[in-house]
Length: 348
Image (cartoon, rainbow, N blue to C red; front, side):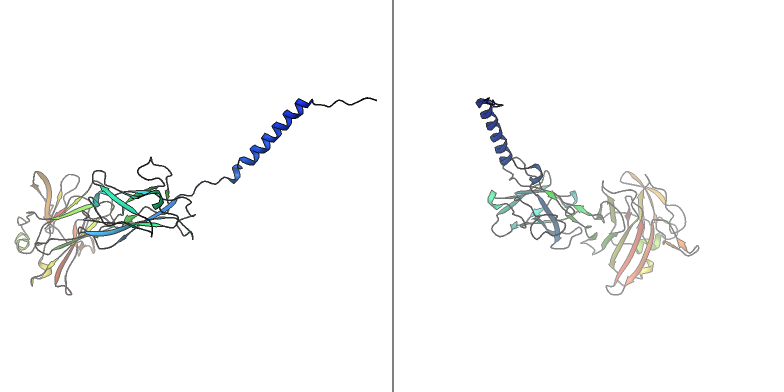
């Protein structure tokens, strides 16, 4: 009788058993690739006004919220880790700002600081246990006196991390929805000396600065100079575009309001000046071209503006021109609006 020899020796069988056990252990210990889930890190940021703005002090609150349950748009999921810090870049037109007292969800201690050099707000949890859990928020109030006006929104670019500022930045969060912004700056300014107000409107992109004061003079006009000397705006208005102003923007409208003092609104005339560089001489109310006048070392086209409506043609004259002029019976103020192209206009 013959005996079959085993295919493997005892040593070989032990080695194969050890390998099998190692493979089984590895499969049990290692999670499957398809089952692994990355951490969800989403937050929203919005700005709400506390008081009005527009060349005058204003106050706002910027709220940052860690996305939570129930999930509401623009969040797409509930965050799975805490939010430890946020950084907010303040637009130039709002610098410098003054921070108010920061408040967060109950049980969370947060503080904020503003760096005037970088124009950045840093808000942070006091400790790791103060991080914003999913669904929690922090309110960051601030106030500022915005410079100039704009119809385009001003963005307060906001970023967030799971780490605290005392540690290297880690666990970056993604903002969902739009960055927080302020829409326009009100665009109404008041001369404290005369009470004259100036409002800038129109579909323009960028930022303009409005100031009062100056000695613009159109008394040289042969036809309307004497009338203008008696009936002009109480204060010269200077409208200067900033570096972010887009030259291809639509015309702006500048509206002046001031007490009548019993005068006839139709008697008032607008003396207008625009730099010769980049502009052509506009047609004056008398029908001729604007006069070149040197103001402070810069040449300007200066003249009395015509009405935008041309009764001869029934059409509209090109900018700059007076688009509206009337007496507001409700306020007893004269209202005069001027349509103008992008540039550096002065008017009086």
